[in-house]
Amino acid sequence: MEIRKVENYSEMSQTASTIIINTIKHKKSPVLGLATGSTPEGLYQELIHQYNNHVFSFKDVTTFNLDEYVGLGKGNPQSYHYYMKEKLFKHLDINMENVNIPNGTVQHLEKECENYEKSIKEAGYIDVQVLGLGLNGHIGFNEPGTPFSSSTHVVELDDTTRKANARFFTSMDEVPQKAITMGLTTIMHSKKILLLVSGENKAEPLARLINGNISEDFPASMLKKHPNVTIIADKSAFVALNSK
Ligand SMILES: N[C@@H]1[C@@H](O)[C@H](O)[C@@H](COP(=O)(O)O)O[C@@H]1O
Image 1 (cartoon, rainbow, N blue to C red):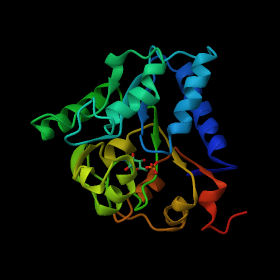
Image 2: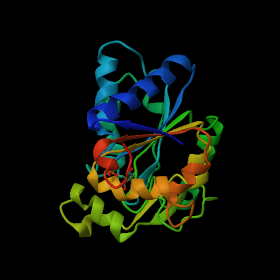
Image 3: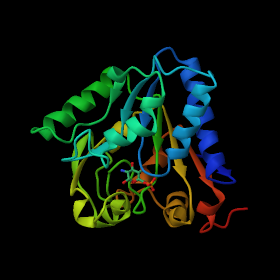
Image 4: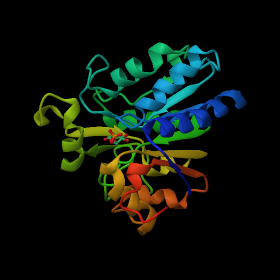
């Protein structure tokens, strides 16, 4: 894993956007894997900014999001569909037919997972996958204990995750119990992975990722087995590590 220590959130976002824009410029039909949460918001703002400066176009880009809550429709402001539209897609020239986010409102969730996995495979897998880091080491919504061999599946969310995400809802009761997430093996098929980490609250999981063992108890540790991972983390996320 390549580790890039940057000054702050803004530098983390800019560094990630440079890598993504280079991929978009140099690949004919780039496939991006996108994340939600607070961490990538700055990256999305930076991409919009560069797009407005005519640096690149999103018209040939295909995207796959990592996850979506079960039971939240596209129009629900807490859904990841809504988040992605508001924070990125509506500002760009992306063809919405090339945007893929799991649908958590269908009756047959297992079928939705199978179809999602199939679409990623048919797209030739992901060129650059953006990831955030959950407090318990989750990536996407792959909670501790998820087999490394998992493909897109339905998950029961951990209380830690529901509590951490409750800030986006009016109360903890409103946070869905389940979600659909890309699996760990799906993520590992990505050609390049960018893990973004910012803030002191991520210092412990980051230290565990860097110094700890590879174990299904800590899903992000799987990334150590991938040949092309770049961790972009800001100074505050490094406080639990004795690095210079
Ligand atoms: N499902 C999302 C993940 O995709 C995200 O990367 C992570 C970290 O979120 P944040 O960036 O808000 O800390 O937790 C959420 O539960």
